[in-house]
Length: 530
Image: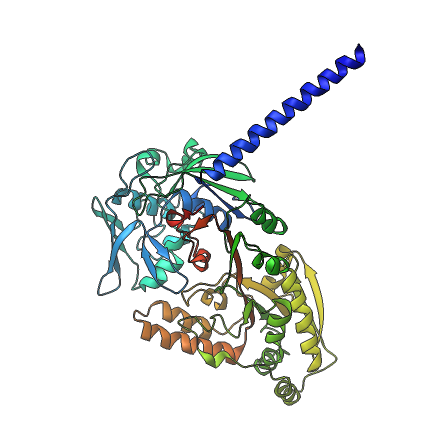
């Protein structure tokens, strides 16, 4: 009798489990078969949902769904309307006037107005708020003088005028400043004391004007949204959007098993070891796209033995093509400067090639001491970069320069490089379509003067390009900037690594994934095709 009771309980338990599994499967199947949910994966989690208080690209993925910025940025250096419908710079390049899309609404139905843009700009620039991203508004007149001093004005309900402290290039503004400014609602936050704005319950369930409406989250794991069917650019054809955090080694299996529809791109791309298999899957669309991000080797110019000529020898001794072919399997491009060959501002003067014999000749002329051992600082965590260090070490040994690789976590490595306790050091950059991206790294008094430069010429030349207003004038400055980089060699640029992107065939109209590096995704255009 006891045995029969146990068996009955076991059967009941199995039936319950089967029913639960069945319901789960049915619910999942309905969700997918109904074609209303898109699931996107990225490899790490957001830190917060406060647009002015993060520098995380992972948070920006979330913010770009909930909120709007003024323009949609493209990797080719152009930009298109987003919240802004049109814009115009004054003849003296000191007043930027922006016309907002009159159909834009907050998720609660209230209109987005010029007052919201003014409010947002003042929050970013407020000394009381002391926003993490305050420097995004530092070109504007009145920056940080007081909480209300920044010179941005609502001319009418949908027109905003930004007054600049000095003449400024509009491309520079959009790509390096407005890129990270997400407009927040005055009618929901404007009543709060500035010192308390971070503590508002609003941030637990933020209301924006973007293509997706925040619904819920499991911290560090997933976030769910519903479609903003009244989005002013286009009503999304999907109903729900799920953002999942998935470790890089699990991305391909998630795509193959239809658990992931699309990768987030620059902060969610396939690992190189999975690329061949990904391309063979019938349910996947794959795309290896060029990026503006690059890896480089900083050289400590403060070391008297690393003269400009020695640095030039180091630069031409590195076999970049071997790194691209061997480590990247061709999914990348050799870098000789901060701009790829496709970049509008690329100057081929930077291409010093691979010339170890010339490097040896230069070292002999410089009287190089072949017994000297250089400290080669390498951060851990990026396998390709760590292996590239070994190739570079061998390349330098071949011309008579000995190195000792010192590995450390990125934070320790970064402190070592900033303090100048190294000779050579590997670092990466996200790059930008705007040529001013790396200029700040050559400013002698800046924290990111990794090369320990004391000469201001590279920085001054690059900074002058920020104040030039036609493409032709800017090109002259940045051509000279690249010439100085080749002469002084504070950095030896190494390679651009492609973004290995994939999405499921059930989603479509995903065409410009290379633009994701500019912290925007046109999810309102994405469709379900099956």
